[in-house]
Amino acid sequence: MSTKTKVALSEETKPSRRKFFIGAGAAVGAVAVVSQTPVGKAVIQEISGAKAVKDVGPTMTAHMRKYYETTLI
Image 1 (cartoon, rainbow, N blue to C red):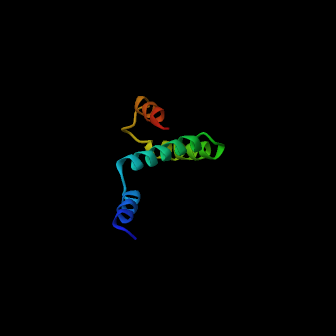
Image 2 (cartoon, one colour; image 1 turned 90 degrees about the horizontal axis):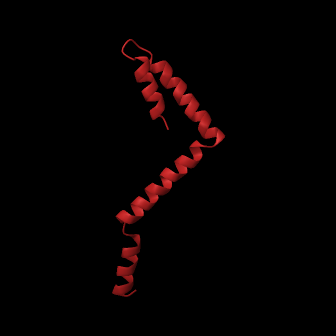
């Protein structure tokens, strides 16, 4: 194996910011798509129900509860 070939191989396997952001973008896109499926919506409903029970307390006002419900994805 020549030196040029070794350098080319190391450049291909070297992590880069571009590959990281492409991968992160793909992951976010996949989560967005899955959240719109029936299974994803069921998970969101379950999380919302658990959060609503957990957030009930003397310091949580109706205005605050509405705000947090609108921030859920």
